[in-house]
Length: 160
Length: 262
View 1 (cartoon, rainbow over the protein chains, first blue to last red):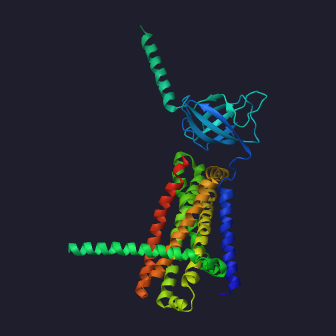
View 2 (cartoon, each protein chain N blue to C red):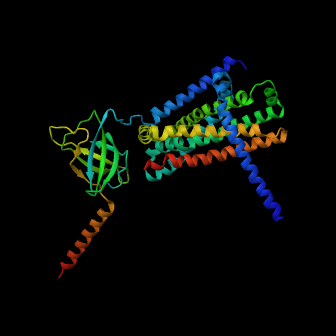
View 3 (spheres, each protein chain N blue to C red):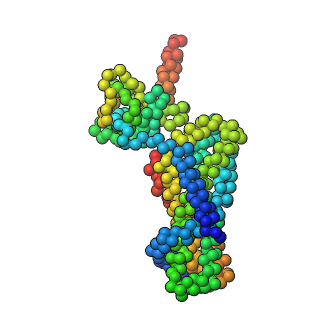
């Protein structure tokens, strides 16, 4: 076996392999993870986060503007403390409200941001004051059933 | 009868422990002598040709077909829930996380591992290794270490090619043949596949499989009885042991890597 021909084959094998890795990294995976340098973190307290998980997207007007960095439990206030890592390119007013929403009927949960009207913008380490909890399906069904039962009682009482 | 059975069991156990000890010593000797594999990189490149380049065809064709089957089966199941747009996610995640490294590892074990065992076993049977020792050439440095590093370098590349080919196959069947929307196929895939969490872990997995498969293949060849039967048995054992090792290691690595995901 000629050495140069062999080198050529191995070289093209290595290049093809690295090409495949690059294809996986760029085309298949998302390299656009927000890293620490071009992002800032804000905190939001929720009474109930439902099924929110770390790395869930943070969206405003449907556009992904950041990710959930961390979820902790505050043992003083008995609330969930959610840290949001937002892209530096997007600034939000101080009175922005955060709510936990679900994409689709059974989709994943994400944090939705709705901008307020304050002239000051949120800075690194700030706290979002207006929050809306996740809708828990069981509570919703409970309320619905309770409402139905009340309705039934009202109808029962009516013919008398 | 019973006594014989117990004796045989004990004998087997002692033999097994003996082999594990010998294999560990072999592994350490191989690592210590791998300087030659990098100083004379031509040797490693030669072995990369045999275990990497010559495995390409089976890896690429299998990857393509596995991806195509994933595309078909995934579509069949997903369209029942009206979420066929998640086909790209399904194909990419199952390939990058599991099927790529594992199937490439199994194919590598049967294609390259068996060849390594047979070659080294035959070298031993024809006393080429002893002849090298007589000429003061260390066979572990000259023969074993280059094959080890060639396998360790080739395996992640082969697994990446397998995954890429599989995703292409899934794209071919899902988008071109069945008509899943191309935009949602790629964008949902990109949204779900994470570089560190999925792709890098897949690469780590395949590198570990490369270490395991080549070590087993080299050791079985080096330890084979120097007869025709011994070499053939060692080759069979290589394929069986390294396939089992790949599957067992995959479980352990997956348990480690994806435990903290949720």
